[in-house]
Length: 206
Length: 307
Image (cartoon, rainbow over all chains, first blue to last red; front, side, top):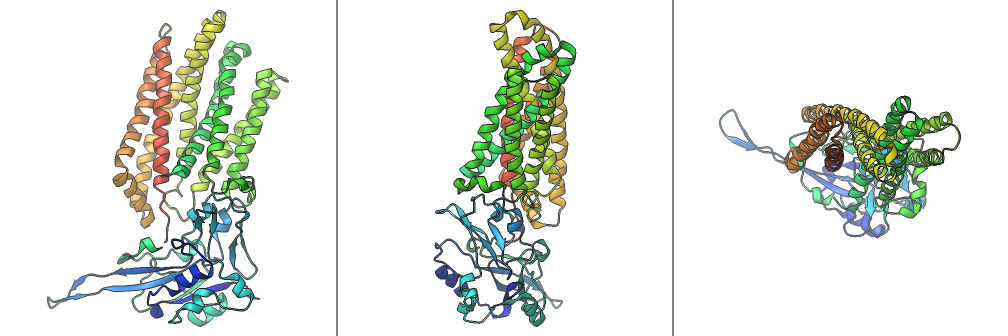
């Protein structure tokens, strides 16, 4: 059994098609306005004056597909007053809806907006890393659905050995806050965390 | 802002007012009993003490409206090891229980006054833990506008400011009642009332000073931060809610500062009980509105790091 399962995301491969997000909504039968996995679009750029007086543009845009990062230091689990959030031995962070009191404190605390409130049930919900599929030896729905193979799932230490240990890029928060089990392979245009040259282009979709 | 947010404003303001009132009432009682004797101090305080109960219960009930799944509310104390929210709810419940035990003992004059004092001190200490836990809830490392020392300072300032002025208003109401029911002791009570209101007026002037020093420093600190979420919180305060913010500052200054000075002056010489009483009511009402606005702004400034 894995010690810490993690998602891997390749920025250069993602086309922003949101098949991962929709596959997740379908697998978990989520309402249309609830997105356990979201695809953030970070873009920016402007006209830059060259030394010879001509202008060139440095426009850029890229996507970051993010769900729950099943953090090594999950702030949601730390703050949940009802002990409804637990971390399994394989690192998967789960919300027990039967124990949840619906105070939304986890939603306040998580810098990835992973815990989301279900108005109908009055309880919190979030990405389970498709724990039933994982237990059956299958891939999570989002990973299986990605047409460009931008997503992978695996043991965190193995993914880091293979792809490096980057876990923070704009517009994500600093990794030190919650130590996300997330490995990101940046593209040439990917900006560092706290970059000021771009902005989240689709806040309404997050 | 929906019902859930107003539930938190009501809960935090009412329970802080209850804790502040309990402690201020105890301090005034200590001095009053030393100078005028326990019997007179009891007459001054006992009805005000009983009035704290409904305020506290109302606040705690309001907190349930914040929950999406209130049938599980009993589970809120399940994570005392790491959740300040659990610690807050436990101290809230303990404050209600120990406070109620003390109020009952004091009302029926059960046991000795020394024993009752110990129970009161325990309740007061739990009340301090309650307000401290409440402030720590908001000091999340992912919410820089809340994660500052200004959160506990302003929570405690609100606690004692509302406590002092609520107690002042309660004394005045109690005095009006005594004048009708037991005219015999009204003269001594009037003297105690004037002395107590002078002390409370001084306290409220000092506490509004704390607010007016901390708030500008806090805004300057957030503005100078290189974390975008902190700057955004300032923009919310200064752009979206500038009018509410200005009104909140003016009202707290008028209610606790200006009315506080007038209250002190009118409580200094006998024969001005009528205007003194009205000032005590007005100061409490104005500051209550100002503090509710302040708490509204506190929640409005919630800006989280990340997505």
